[in-house]
Amino acid sequence: MHIVSKYEKYKRFDEYIWANYSFANKNDKSSLTKDYVSDIVKLSNIIGRLEIYLMDKQDLENAHYICKWFEQEFDESYSMEDFKDWLNDNE
Image (cartoon, rainbow, N blue to C red; front, side):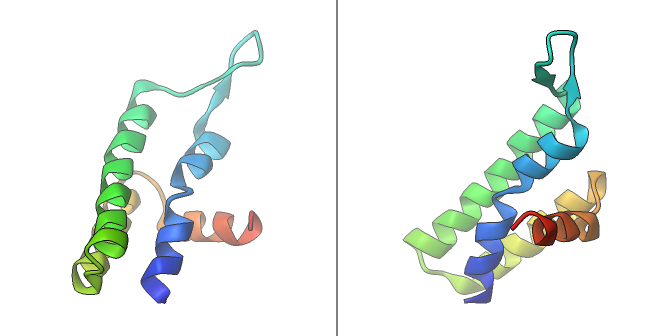
């Protein structure tokens, strides 16, 4: 199902943020600024709701709306097209 495949891909957004927005300090440890961590928390919440609609409630209509919400929220700070390209390159 299309929404389930989106869920499987979209839940990798944290990998995308780490790969593209993390910084290495002098000890070669990766870190993120507070803004990126907040974004990860916010987007994780949306993906968690999507999982509940898909797996627990099997409510595809609301799962579709959650996907649209995720895309909108993601596109506010990042590029959905860049994320999709990154997903295709890192499958």
